[in-house]
Image (tube, rainbow, N blue to C red):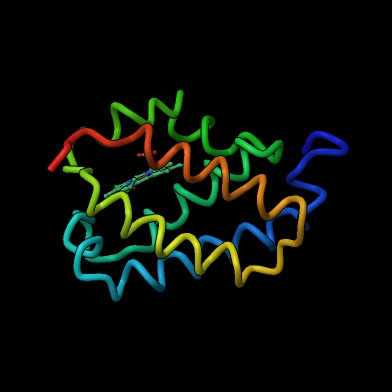
Length: 126
Ligand code: HEM
């Protein structure tokens, strides 16, 4: 990890584990989001999102070692992401961000990024 990174400041891998586990607990129960996930087991999807976010915030580069360049817009094209899907994703993520123990100012910084990213991955307007 980069010294002084956001990743270190918020508690490293353990914090990202909590964040993404909480998010996927919501996805598992969400009637909009759950059907979008092709695999029965959400574990692999949980790991990909966790590794991506760790890398993005200055942690280890395991995500790209395994998956290559993120290309998130392209990788989301198979799934319809309209306003309903985006809002469901952000609803689940809001709970996860609020409950994973990240404090201000990092919490707002993380949330602003996730909100921007969710808007940018939309590929449908209905
Ligand atoms: C993968 C849905 C937003 C990061 C996926 C997958 C789905 C999905 C269905 C496939 C699951 C899998 O990996 O097997 C959505 C929806 C979003 C959303 C409905 C609403 C806007 C985001 C955002 C980020 C993100 C904002 C990042 C900040 C990822 C990553 C993967 C992924 C890293 C795995 C890519 C890979 O390596 O294959 N998403 N996503 N997603 N998503 Fe999202």
